[in-house]
Structure formats: C-alpha cells, structure tokens
Image 1: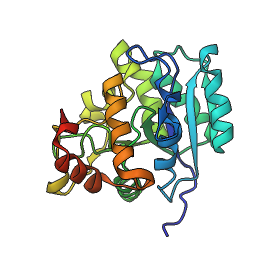
Image 2 (image 1 turned 90 degrees about the vertical axis):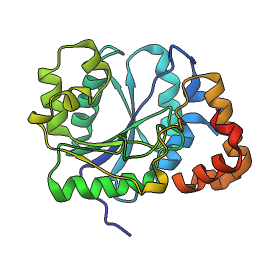
Image 3 (image 1 turned 180 degrees about the vertical axis):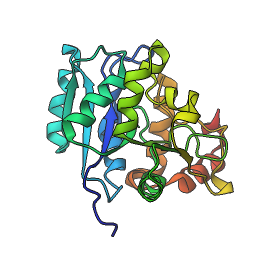
Length: 240
C-alpha cells in the first residue's frame, strides 16, 4: 500500500443550490446520497491524509455538514461568496494546512481514484503546480480530478479577477501556462472515450448514473473507467 502523504487532502466542492438540478448532492444513487458515493470513490485513494467537503456559508448548505460528520470526513464552510469557488478552495486548503489538494466535484460519482493516485505521485515527484486528466488524451468527463499545490491556488486567488476564473477553480492556471508547472496524466488509449459524459448535471444524467448502479450493483463502488466503459459499450443506450 502507498504510504499516506502528509499534507495531501482531497477537497470535494459541494453545494445544495445547483442551478440545473437543485439538491442533487443529496439525491439517491444506488441507496446512498450522491455525495456519499463521491466520498466512497475518493476513499479508494490510499495516500490521502484526509477528505474534506467544502461548501459556502450559505445556510442552505447546513445539511452537508451533518452528512460529512456521518461519513467521518472533514467539513469546511467558506466565508467567500458561493460563486467564488477558487477562494473556497484556498480557505479550505489553508484551514487543513494542506500542501497539495485533490480537487473533486460532488457531481462526479464515478471519479476515478486509480488515476488520482498516479497523479498525486506525479505531482510530488515533479513538484508540479497542477496535474490533470481532463484533456483529449485523458479520461471522460465524470472520471476526472485535479491535483494542485496550495501555493498555486493562493497565487491564482491573488491574480485572478475574472468571474470565470473565480468560479472555475483552475481555469486561471490553464489560461496562464507560462506561470505554472502543469502536467497532464494520459489515459491508456482504450480509456480515451471523450464522447462519454458521466457528470451529473441534470435529471437525465442522474438516471443514467442510477442505471449504471443498477447494472453493476455494489461493484459500482470500485469499478474503474474500464469496467464502466465496457458496460456502456454493452448497453449502447446509456451513451445517448
């Protein structure tokens, strides 16, 4: 087993007030909350010091604190405005005394912990500011995560002024590649199915995720991209 990396935390961004599917993080997916399914996946990444659910101080998000406590993970409610997700990450990372964070979104119940582990290792080995797997040679949307140094997050927060850079946490990094050490994790060719999208944004997306859980059962907790893509190939209607 890979040794725990002190100062490496996964931070899952979550909120109740999703514009397209309000309350989705607490909706049922295979008998558990969507957010709980995300936590289950992240827990498979063995070198993390801890997991934190990070939200805003909006009172609507109070239910997330209770769920985080039940799941045995940390919780942080940022003072930053709900749309300033970048500052939320900076606050949470600082609170945790994190050196490196793994950015995970609560609408990705099939987040891949296996590539996450390799990206963490790559980040430490190469002293990277950011390692990502959401690109043409990477994984499908819904499997992806990012590994970012807290120092890089703080630099972003000091320099980013556009609302899009504040809301989309790492977009400033990708828009300024000359200022950061950015590395990409490449997926095996068989897993580069960019036409597949498994992020849960709508009721239709949630039903697709539920269908995957119905077909895989509790094995869905551990299934990597290979097993899930094989299921999608066998049940072509799931891709529609």
